[in-house]
Length: 280
Image 1: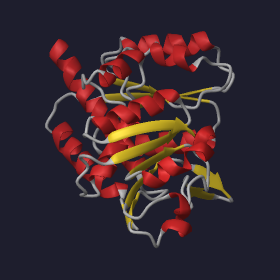
Image 2 (image 1 turned 90 degrees about the vertical axis):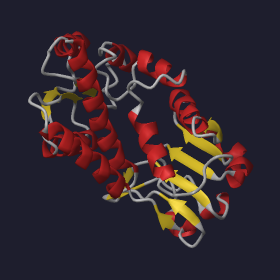
Image 3 (image 1 turned 120 degrees about the horizontal axis):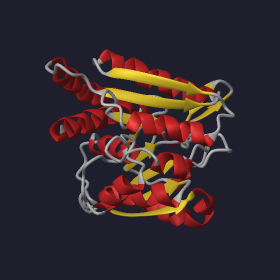
């Protein structure tokens, strides 16, 4: 298996953004709301902060308590929506169970929704209107393209935890002339034959060992977007030892989707920044 490393892709994006930001008087500003004490979330936000600052972007971090009232979160988002120094807003997921994820995300001004999760941005993407692309699917597509393989005419399967991600990822693949379908992880046992026939497999479940070498064909392109910590070690959905001798490509965990996702997020902030500058 050849590794599809995320760092070279991320570095290309970040170097371009850093150069662009250095030429501007006003800097793009990203606000991140982090609620609760989830260790992984704190790690991800710290990585975003470090990377944003390294390219000259302004970073505003808001850490809120686990039991924060929902209206307090919504009020903060409304303040950020009208703050001219803030050009992108994200709420780090997952949220505590007391909070309504859909309500919180939908309260972000779509022009500042740089994760691309809002209903308006998802709808635009599904219709082929590319303003702010959903970050995670975009990062996955960049990794697939980095294989250098001819993608037109290939067939792909997406293994997902939600219908929303499955639909968005399927459309992202189809936009590159790849035939695609998705199914939820709980239905994987009924879909083994489909997985074995796939030229491209995208898995974003967070279930170690979900996929193994016997389930994948030679020459397959695998994007492992699952992240889970086991015995202090970060691993993905794919049992790597069972597939490493196969021909094909795989994004490693860690070091695959993660760095590209952060770079794509910051690229969305710059896209949002430029759009908002034109509106002034």
